[in-house]
Image 1 (cartoon, helix red, strand yellow):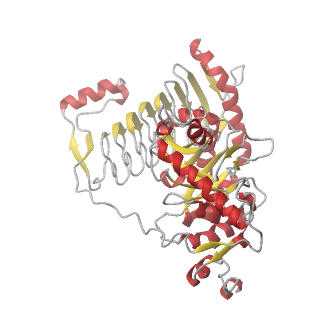
Image 2 (image 1 turned 45 degrees about the vertical axis):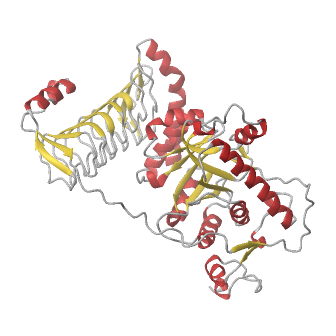
Image 3 (image 1 turned 135 degrees about the horizontal axis):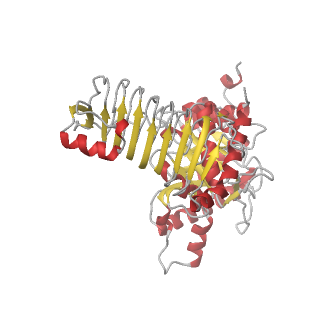
Length: 526
């Protein structure tokens, strides 16, 4: 059996070789083949994953064998035919591809697709068409649980039996089932099709072998009483009860300069690091909000032009794209335009190791392997996050403090620190945290002293001029902190500079209690 890393490298190599040929082949109306020699002899593939992301309009591909996860995602109008099986996430984020899988497909086929057509001719796994926003998904054969889960629009046609909870959480679209269908969950109605619907759907299918009969049933969403969900407990405290002490260093002069720059993506000769003037990645929904008025000062423009943000749409060339289930289909444009990417695994489906390999092959093919990338996961999954980030060679492993557990921020520091020491030493993966609110200079200094490389947070306001003022305030306040501590660089902050200002913070954070000047005794117990 091939080593997983060998499969990943083979997959990257296939994508790199196909890339330059796709547009030329489309212009010549030629079909490119995977799984045959140049002489036409069959050499079936076995597990290659993440193949052919963002097939351009007019491109035609044919593959032979058993393909892995994330095959032909984010397509823009090409045609992909698999003579064999496909793994999970076939055609995920599809935006116009026509995909045919002649045998079985895994879970999450057509996940978050917006347009195009996917035909699976021998059954599919669970969650087919989940979060679908448009397009047509056809499955001939048995389909697993939760088909069309959370779908918002589009059409799913199943010629076969479906598993439990069909249409769970659907908000729009239709699921047509020509087979046995269990009682749908709350919020989904099961009804017969009208004669007009049968005629219209068969016209859309445009295939006599896949036509639906008049006795097929249709699932559609029904109106339910919406109840606001609790997001879990919020963090029980902030970092205000952690002090910063100089440890006998003399203060710096008021006119001294301070180094607050942090690099992300330091991999030696293998990557392109991104410089952050502050160890900060603030989250902004739309990069267009960073446009200043025409009469703004050059200094204000310079501050924004140098500070990268995490944006969900329209990133600048220095920004990092923040990718989750809501903008996954926009991945090709987001990843090409940005300096790097951060993938929010709390808001993407849970994936096993093979599926993660396929995901990263696909997205890193689009963004370029030289660009840095990071992963976000909840604080309660920090160890798993660090293990996966190291295995997949991520540049950042970011723990979300507000994960619903209510763990205080001070208690998060030893959780993250211990896991990083066990799982990230000797790797190029750096540690980050995502705070629930906007950060202060004090927060940045405390977290940096705790070994945190990057701090992500929400912005306190979205107006570009106000953001300039916020960033300028952070720079000035950070300079004040470093001056008081007698340090000339933010990288010289150490855990020895931290003191717990009350007994509770010392008890949960493992820091030296001020006055006592050592951690509490239970931190030394084995």
